Image 1 (tube, rainbow, N blue to C red):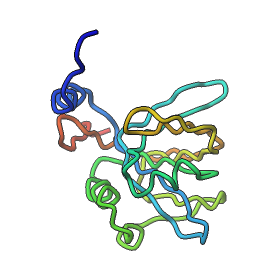
Image 2: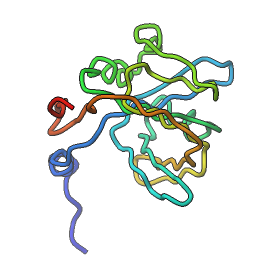
Image 3: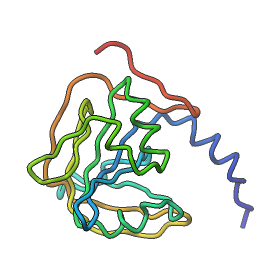
Image 4: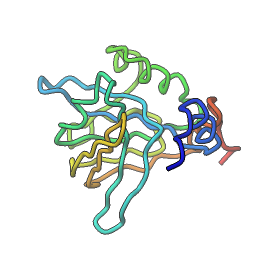
Length: 161
């Protein structure tokens, strides 16, 4: 068996794949909104509609998200770098600094996002230092404008839509 690649090399290799940037949101038991930035998000299945997010097991929100009955994925728009950084910081006051609303499902929705995808927890699987959380898509809202992208450790945007 060949040796595994060092983490720093793996990060450089994967950094060559441009990804969208999303903020995963849910609510705590007391109803408080909570969220974190995630760039590991993908569609998994059309029938039934399933998406996945990956959450570091060391993240403060890992247990909350792996146990959440429902969660939302807010796909950020170009120009929302500050929102991404705020939700990546672990600061518990992100919702005080950024505009958001509440969908009929009661899930927090960030204003200005290009899409808001509502999910019901399907399963969570441990994979190395992350958990893969699968969600059944129950609804969503499509916004306007180009998405925020992350490539080689920096934020980027598409040209004008």
